[in-house]
Length: 320
Ligand SMILES: Nc1nc2c(ncn2[C@@H]2O[C@H](COP(=O)(O)OP(=O)(O)O)[C@@H](O)[C@H]2O)c(=O)[nH]1
Ligand SMILES: [Mg+2]
Image (cartoon, helix red, strand yellow):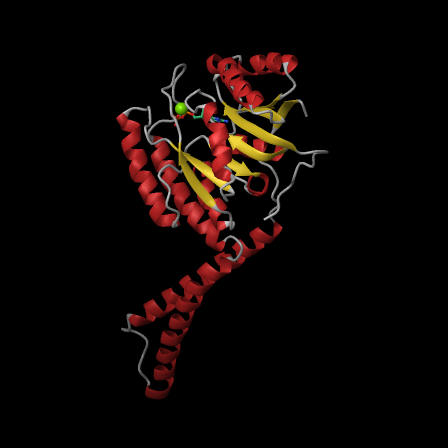
């Protein structure tokens, strides 16, 4: 899977990608904490913040931070495109050999980055955090648990916390994953299907100090619909005809068989077609078969001609 890549002159050691949406109160403290951890490691790093159409003064703050410290780069979207698109933009713009993503609300702890890097070096391509002791209300923890179980079961990847904000990736993973909609929740599954080695590590989680959660109950419904998308995309995007065409053929052949027999009986034994309800089943199957088959073919055509272009629009890029 090769998407458009940002070719940078030289790679640095580590990029930290933080999607932010109305997190003005947290940003300065967050950047200070990350900087402290990374500079103590003697890494060549960048902190890449993606402002996804915030309505508060998030971007002004990012501008000030960028003026003071060129390790800090910032992208501003023209409007809110969602967390998945923000992560995609971050992956595209990053130049680190290793990439870390984390939430912008101070709930993820930057102090975990060195241990995550150590875990990655044990032989993984992606290590996902696990908020084992999660500091969120039960109304969020409980549904999340069920959702994680279900996702584990459906995707065949055993993880406790798919949607943990803090994750560490090797460059190849970050550059080959393109997420949109709510698909960021399934990054570990997408990576696994891409042939990457995925692990998990328990991380510290902190309560939200400022602002409020951006997601309501609707996340669980959307999340479930996206699970279906993920399952479908991973298996059949390349060959939609394999899914639709197979059922199309099955219905088509049965339908043709039934109608052919009825026609032969009509001709040879003069059994009239009136009063033969099965005729309708034959015709129905023929039509369903043709429908499915053509949907499959249309899908194939769309896959062929679809460009893997970006969906988000950037207004400003500090440190481009
Ligand atoms: N780019 C982007 N980030 C978002 C959006 N909604 C939430 N976030 C970020 O995602 C992270 C987690 O969001 P949060 O509301 O804390 O979700 P929770 O921790 O699951 O309750 C934070 O860093 C938010 O700034 C969005 O629409 N776009
Ligand atoms: Mg949060």
